Image 1 (cartoon, helix red, strand yellow):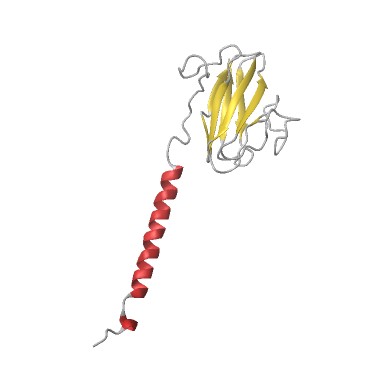
Image 2 (image 1 turned 180 degrees about the vertical axis):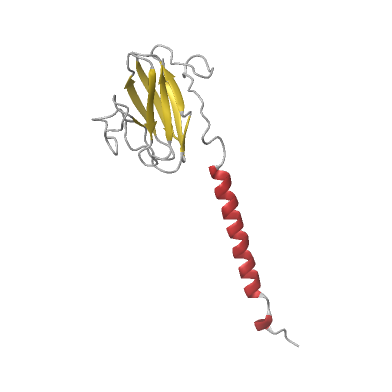
Length: 162
C-alpha cells in the first residue's frame, strides 16, 4: 500500500520554518543594535594617553569610529584655540558623515558640504571608508555639537573645548 502524499504535514512544516526564521531575524536585529549605544566616552589620542577626557597631543589626531547608528566615542575633548584633526572610520554598513555645528552652535546646513560648517572629508563616508575632519577649536572653553546628517536624531555627540 502506497502512502497518501496529499496528507503529509507539509504546510505545518513550512509555517514552522517561517516562524523560526522570523525569530532568528528579530534576535539578530536586536543583538546588532545593542551594545554601548548612548554611553558617553571621551576620545583618546592615537599617540598618547588613553585616559578618559584626553586631549590630542600636539599634532596627534583623534580617532572616531562610526557604527550603525552611533559614534564611538561620542564625546571628545580638544584644547581651546588649537586645530584638531579627527580621523574618522565608518565601521558600519550604511553611509555616514561627521558634521560639526557652526560657531553659533547651530547647524547652518541641513547636509554639510564643508563650505559652511566643519564636515568630514569626504562628506559621505561609505561603509569601510575613512575620512578626516579638521576643526579650529574656539579660543574659549565650551561644547560643540556634532551629528551624522544621515541619522541626525540617533548619531550625535559633543566636542568639549577646554
